[in-house]
Length: 365
Image 1 (cartoon, one colour):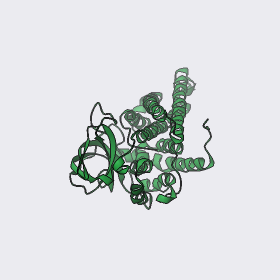
Image 2 (image 1 turned 135 degrees about the vertical axis):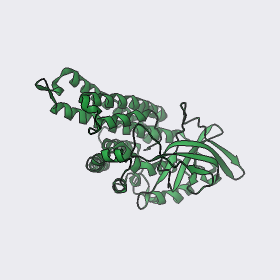
Image 3 (image 1 turned 90 degrees about the vertical axis):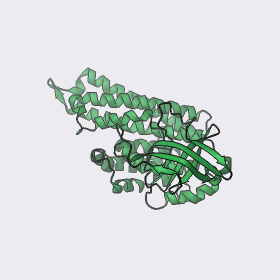
């Protein structure tokens, strides 16, 4: 049975992330959203906490071991501060963690020390495709073997920091299976859109379209080497990360709405004393707690190699997407007319919360 109490190392990490989220991410979130730009110093400070480094063994340049549970705790805490900032800090994990989970020994030795060593640099991954029936297990982007090379063709959407990325881990359909391919920044046929994606939320996070027109990579650049890899644990780790981020955003909305309700007075009493508002806040808290337990269980099953870990991760991600939308919508409702004003963050929480149903692949634990 897994424990509900973080161990000492986990608690230290969560505390460090929590301070960064409260003291740095949250104060900068509004301006970053309005200006559509995250300060480099802000990202760098989050990188210095060492989330990825603590998940990478010493042999590959880090100082710890990967744990999905620890990652889930940290992602929730960071997203509580600001979702766009959290995703920005964790973008290099999209490249490094799949290599750690499924890469060949040569790939681990070649790429992981480069990513985790030194300052934050834009290593990223491209999974999502711009299609209403997008399915991570049935991608339209294709990979075909041609002699000693794989040829990649297709288009990816919502790729964080694609412009200027050192390398991109591109997921493509190879004979009906989703496989990752390491594409260097100077690869012929790789084109990144000039304009960033324009979305309802996450405006501070630079997301781009990426086109692959006959991009050739050697067989050694297939994730896992010539033999390839199992995509299921990678996708499950992305879903746990998405669920954890949704928890952070929902928790932020609940906290802000609760504090507002305790201060806002109407008809001679605080609105938190009104039964309709109190019940609403209680339901928000209940949904958050339920999804948190589901997410922790999925993460624990990933760490312990349980056979149904992928199923639990899927349940956590889909449940979290619905929960985030409900909680953040009610956060706006509690504030009434003020909830619609951009000076209050609940409207941004709601806009960001709407994306969890479609943006799996922007974080990984």
